[in-house]
Amino acid sequence: MSLNVIYGGLELGFIYGIMALGLYISFKIMNIPDLTTDGSFTLGLAVSAVIANQNHTWLGILFAFLAGCCAGLVTGFLQTKLRIHPVLAGIISMCGLYSINLMILGSPNVNVQRQSRLFTSVDNFFRSMGLDFFGRHSAKLVVSFLAVSVCVVVMIWFFRTHFGFCLRATGNNEYMVRASSINVDVSKMVALMLSNGLIALSGGLIAQYQGYADISSGNGILVVGLASVIIGEAIFGKRSVAVGLISAIAGSVLYRFIITWVINSGIFTAQVIRLITALIVAFALSIPAFKYYITRFKIKHGGDQSA
Image (cartoon, rainbow, N blue to C red; front, side):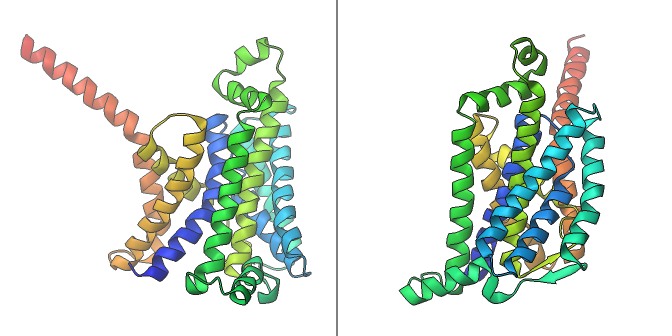
């Protein structure tokens, strides 16, 4: 791999890693199968692109996060107050967000003006200060790394607070938490707000990274995020929440390198990337089943031999 490919993989790995953090919170910490992801990711892209084009670059990033929190709040409300199954609640929110995203964008895709992008502003600053250590990748590497680092540090701190422990306890044993007079509904809604806020934040950064927002950008993004979380967990194992959050980032970066290698190898075309991602996720999720069948096979045949 060339240096440009490595730098590009790191940049996208860090930015999509923020999305993986959000999925880690909902799927791993809270044990909630939240399918709002595709819609909230695109919501972040749309909000960031539209506000950035009004010469409010930083506000675009901030409001992308807040918009994602609102999407998570709606999903959480459907789950907790209206007693809709988590999967169905996510699907309902995702479907509704498609129309909302289209209304925000005004058209299927919107370009982000170059001078309105966060990465352009930082790149200009670096050039003026002579800090372009990585050439044209300097700003993108630094911004993406700082963004994901801040998110990881804040989330690690949050989940070590009293309320953070309540959220973790809710994910571990909801019924025990209810008996402890902790408001489970509030815990779930806050967790989903944080999760979708991070996912939308990732989308907002992607919009300014690639220079456009497309209504179909979030299609299948849930599987990409799950692949990152699963790859990271396979490397680091199931340990503390802090290690889990860091492993999600590492998995995102590694996933980007795997996809880059697959494309550059010439064995597969870009059209089958999502298929490969789906196979990775399916295989990883099937590992417990494989272990069960192998153990069962050994017990069965071991018993036959002893007989």
